[in-house]
Length: 468
Image (tube, rainbow, N blue to C red; front, side):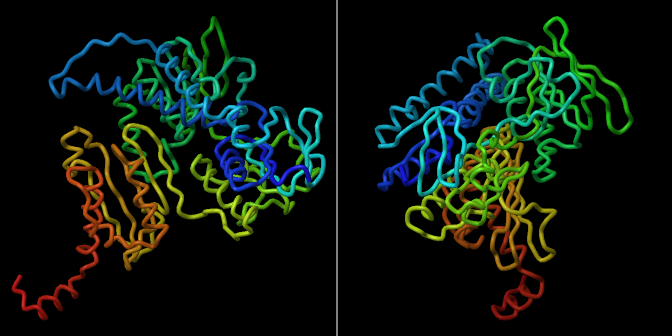
């Protein structure tokens, strides 16, 4: 074999396997058809969160009058997008082929395909390895809509390119659609979100979805739910969308400068010639077992491409488990349950585990509004809540956190769930005041009160001779 490990795809999972494997002592080949860093660095997490930061600054300036502050801003969307580009470039400087070679990793840039169960071909050269890890990620799913293939539209791959426009239609109200729709709206773009479903962020707790929709509309986003797009055409540089309301067939026409497709993701498996390697796959991605192994036991698949939840942090977790299995033969399984997720709207939505409508009858629901959190009150960030689902024994089964800092706080819940830490231990841990974490601890305090039944109170009063 030429290598111990060949890694196909240089995103979060691919880089973790390649760098980790090389540092351990494995001979590694990293193959990437575009740029090292993958979708997250160039077209996803990094540019979107940079743009969101700019939009939050603008939102804060607009809301400054609440604190007696007023300011005039010299701003253009093109300048904001140039900043996004510069941040992406600065992060890519640490992920170039030259940097990989300093780690001792061989790099091949080009399209890759399998030629056997343990060999691939890149740029006309063949390479073999003891183990191969496929980490090719995913890309934007583009639905079939009449006329869409004849116009110039954008996905997350093009939306961050510096350009100037005044109106934007976004198809899809999932995390990407809501995050970018709100960000562009706060930066002065006339934004319309369109979805054929009845809610935004449909995977989330219904109360969270309702609150985010309310804030989107408050920020000037036009939210059109329950609409199908019959056809799209382009005239004089404008995109014209012909919409129909599903409930009553009402027709609506929308004219915008730009169109963003944010209707989900699809795995990058085309051209890999998976059949030649005996690797099973379907429309969701490559089929894997609990260790991340494909039907070809020499080959593993990590991250978006294996049909799991599409998060950078989950891809990183997959990579670590696979690396332990491949190098040390440790039977590490892919995480299936304790997987936090965050949508970086304002307010943020962070969740993990089950939702309220999925709880057992014996489970308790701990709930606290941000309007009762002192830190939220001081910062005028009272739109949000904590909701924690707890078993009667005190183990956390799920949580939805909505509001400022939720993306950071969900890690505390994930730690408790992963390590079987009871909610009472979280409640008994001193949190600094005034912080959002202190509010989370207050929410955890509710467990003892809710689990203290009238019968228990009766016995306590009798034993300790209480008179209340």
